[in-house]
Length: 217
Image 1 (tube, rainbow, N blue to C red):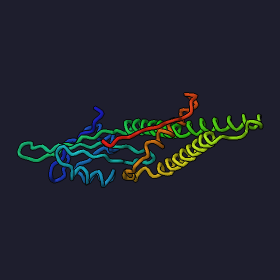
Image 2: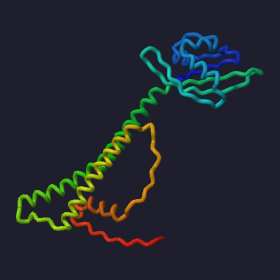
Image 3: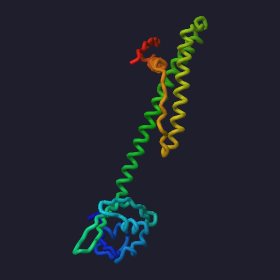
Image 4: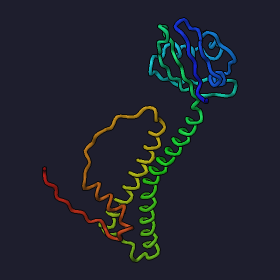
């Protein structure tokens, strides 16, 4: 069997140690728990302190090889004598698989967040560029109306906000171990909806013209 099994009494004498346990611990023989200190002192401490149902992960190094052991303990009474049963399982491959999955999820999150900012920046920059090019090619039509100026200003403002948000996201992502507390803030709903309408202007082909009336609930 692939699971290592080991039993020992309260005085530390080992009763049973199967072949799988010997392979996992890289040891041929052990009569007492102290004999396992050559493998790892923390291993012996873990075996001693674990109670029934207790589980712990241990990292063991053998030269250039590192393994992750999942250790589980059960306390029994056999013939009026207390015995502890330890089971050990190498979960290194499972951890590596989970680590790869975590990296893939991280890449998906990064791609999603970055694209959410880069796409509107590119879209709005294209709109402003196209409008300015049209006016450069036709100097007689280059005079901008107030509505057009406001429209262009809103586009540039949105690009600035999205760029700042992207920079902030990258900076905060550097420190994943310290998750900040959420900061609640009031939002101007009309400005938010105006910005959304501007983002979808190229798709709808219509100028944003939003007038809202709000009632107190």
